[in-house]
Amino acid sequence: MVVNTLNLGTLKFGKRLKKFSNYGKEVRLYFDNSNEGYADLVIGAYGLRSIVRNAGCLNFIPYYLKQAAFLTFINPSKLGRISIY
Image (cartoon, rainbow, N blue to C red; front, top):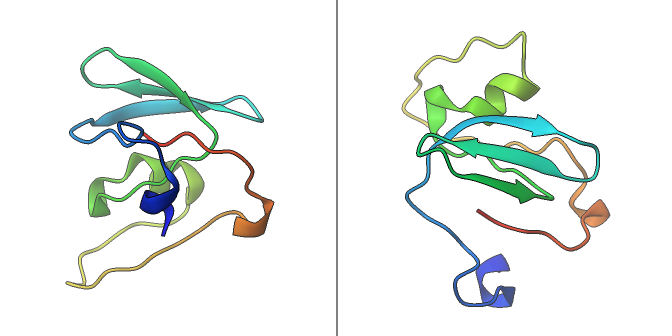
């Protein structure tokens, strides 16, 4: 499990992503409290309001099914070092 490989304090909770910009090898994150950060990998996990999903699936209109789905846009074997917010 990823959590077991991270240093204490690496995961950040209670943040709401406003937008992000892809710069190739890293992604700049803009949060609604005016904070910013950088990451190697961004995972969107808040359902119908997912900013990450909206950026990756431009032609998809979400609707509520009372179910959960997990998507990835990259092959996990290609991941190197990651920063998690």
